[in-house]
View 1 (cartoon, rainbow, N blue to C red):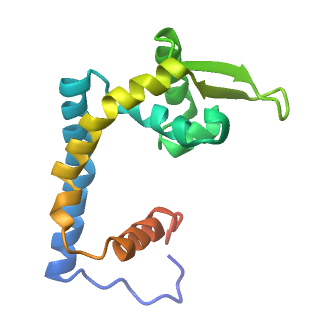
View 2 (view 1 turned 90 degrees about the horizontal axis):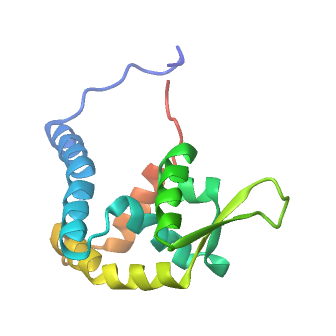
Length: 157
């Protein structure tokens, strides 16, 4: 922390409660959604998420590193996921046409059909565990605040 900065102020009770509950949500929500869609659709969240991002990408394809970043996992982790998805026929890996060095992951028609089959279970789970708890709230402002947090970088040392 730079020496010209004032010392950090303790969190208020409501700030501390917010931080703790947010930490719980960050751990509990993905687990709950994963359990639901595995039970209802047989597809883990770790596979649903890349299929979703690929379905929204131009040409239903993304560079592997971009897909990893979109899914908030390492490139090596994404490589393992894409390998599983390839074995099921849901994704194909191709050399990048842009530079010939990188690899793209492309969603196949079978992968899109699998995503569409799992989507209702994902939707029900996300509504139940998250969205319905914010009924009547300004989701546009909340989304902007969360985006700001997610993109604020490393912050103070």
